[in-house]
Length: 389
Image 1 (cartoon, rainbow, N blue to C red):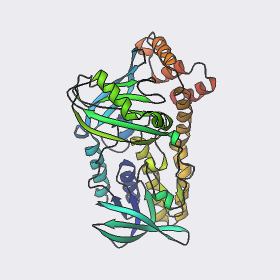
Image 2 (cartoon, one colour):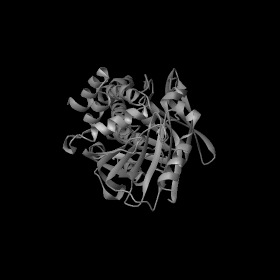
Image 3 (tube, rainbow, N blue to C red):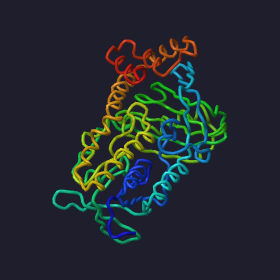
Image 4 (cartoon, one colour):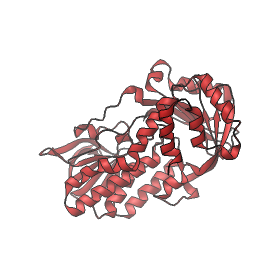
């Protein structure tokens, strides 16, 4: 461990390791702190990603892929099931192995990684973030750097310490719970989504197969719903009806930001990436690939700033992110707000209409157009993300 680094990354998830990797690629010296014992553990994720999404960063490898998905099944409240062929390959990952491989990529480029290191403060000098305070092996330390990258997840405190407004309205924080179960019959090539007030009001319920006998099963509901009835109660009710005897291997719960990106994700001496920056897709709640993209953009810009000796360059990160994905996430947020207000009758009607469409014409874009046919402004948004290339 060096006495000083160009860049310190706080958080060893996909966004953090990508930020570290791409900063190092530019020539910066980088240290990554992870508060947990192991990179990639505990897993707080449904583990679904698109093949094209991860190919930008790592070659798909069967050692971190549990199953390959080629179909989506949407189940309406009345049980009507509509199957859509996927227009791209989707993987269900083994995040423990996947995250570990991402960290190895960064380490191979010279990134130093320290686990079980808890960052508990920032060094701020002359109005600029200049390092971190942290606890390691029971002792307090300080370490200076030129730029801090905050990748410390949805509960991020690092950005807040720097004076960046990281608050999120509780109604935009999805209350989520997930279990991994074994000994169930499930199609290993199909992802299942359930909708309706009995399973996941103002959200959705998922079954992501990890083999033909196991799956990640969970749901997310809005913070407002979660205050009235916990996500855990919805999950327990579903399992009692669908898989009453399934052995539960793991269980996780937490919040997922279902909102647009923070208004400000950079400040003198610091940038924020991943869940900490609210770079999660607000429609799906998926944050692996978008977090990696945020990490790549941020890490690259930070590395460039170090090499150019122009630290003001990091302030271009906000616009670079918005141009790549931020604007699209704003569209997804509007679509989400249109869909999550649907009644059970509306979901049933959509499923019945869409089930009559020939399977070759069943696309995600056509599904959203069917769902939002009476919302002209949202149809324009749908065209922007699903039709216009």
